Image (cartoon, rainbow, N blue to C red; front, side, top):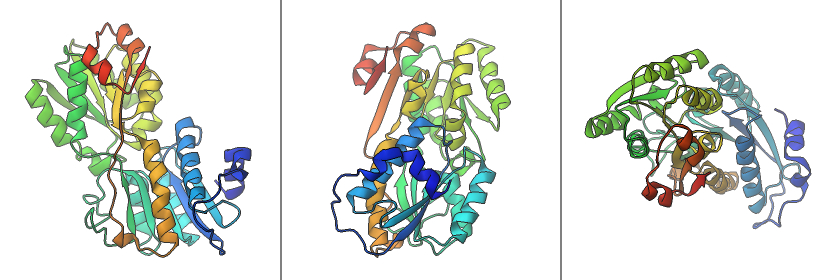
Length: 330
């Protein structure tokens, strides 16, 4: 998506930002932004608006002292690679990378252009940075979630659905952190502690998703753990619908799943990560090196329970969970 399309996307609000918190730069700067999600995703559009609003608060306004080249990959790894090549070839001052596979695609293309990732899981393990404290290269950013989340999600699922005795971890190995292995150890450790049979279910398309969920439904006690992954986000519609069709309780990694009908979701606030990211973009545009900016971890988490979906599944969500939830959908 080119700059003209970007202005159309944001609408008239793009020219009515609040007063900048810092003096604006006199020189026009250019940044690329590669989103792993679909342009039709309303929450992903919110991420972009939040990011651009944040930039304005540091004195950067699109069309005035900043040009933004925004691209969408819709969860397609090949599209990520194509856009990454094009963005790097344009030689911008900085590129914002959304998710692990997007960061990987950009990392393959450049070791010189500064990159700020937003929503990546294991930047050290994937070789993007040397350490959280001192990234050491041209990349830094904002981590979405830790490896322990696989186990945490399974614990929450069994709390809401104690009848679960077999649970499948669903992810796409092409887009999940570590090919899916980043979350797998904590998931399997929690399964042992909870006397739940762990099932690893890599998926690549909607047919794979249905096969995995249908297999869980063949016997009582099946449950689904959906991991944070650009593919599962883009394909959340089929995941949510098939879990409802086969009456399989499922736990999801971000709020949007529960809002759209998933049983429950727990994870960091992605909007908050996009709200924080402009601070690093501003610092780099003003001369800071990514190598010296520590990678940041999430500070805000959300638990969302869809009570309507729980009732449809015949589940009685514990009152303790409902009290702890940041949002309960009736």
